[in-house]
Amino acid sequence: MTNNTIFNIYNKTKEKLRISGIDDCGFEARVIMRHITGFDNKKILMNYNYVLNRSQLLKLDSIIKRRQARYPLQYILGEWSFYGRTFKVGEGVLIPRSDTEVVVETALNLIKDKENPRILDLCAGSGAIGITLSLERPDSNVVLLEKYEKPLQFAERNREINKAQNAQCVQGDVLKSDLADKEFDLIVSNPPYISVSDMKALQPEVRFEPSEALCPGEDELLFYKEIIKRYGNSVSFGGSICFEVGINEAERVKELMSEVFNSVETEKDYAGIERVVFGTAK
Image 1: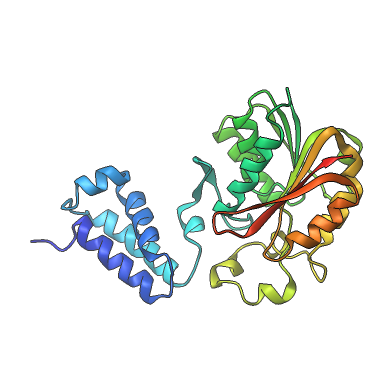
Image 2 (image 1 turned 90 degrees about the vertical axis):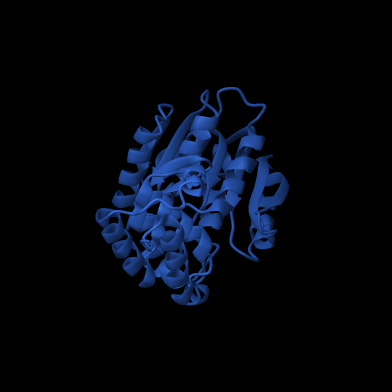
């Protein structure tokens, strides 16, 4: 009997990933098997004895070798799921993370009573936040601002793939853009916030992601300070700013926002970490 059944290959893949130091090896092995076979989880469970062909095995071997070198699985696959939708990703763009889904949930709650909300996504990257908001609120008008060409290309592609017709991708520097002169009901941002020292302690995969999307330099609060200062007056009456923040940054960002916004609050991510800071315009 062949050893190349889904059941055997899954277990071998899981073990190889575990030996390579990948924590969530079981989850990643399942994702890889779905990618290789084209089966969903249910079909995989129903076809454990399905035998992988030569082409599938060669593709699998290539994926495992790259993953053992700690190249991000998201980049290998070329896409990743965020808020139940598929987003294209690759080198040069930050990988969407599940923690950021809490930002989307918080943002949607902030605009639940707004009709035709005007939304600005700063440091948009792949467009995961802004595009998701535009799709969850089809009556909205969303502008995604991104400085760098590569992530802007991914954002535009993701906008097209997900048919987010009410979203617009704009190239520009958050710290200089004239969009600060316009008015929005919601400004949302997942800016660079990892300190120089913390960058050195991140997982090996992160070194493949664009450092400019992760680390703002010596002052990890730089973008929060500048966005609050530059865009504070761009928020409509009763509108909000909503930030993703790093571990142990919530209180400091909350203090910065309290100078300009009312009812500044925080929201925890799925791991219980204060991940979102938001406030309403005075």
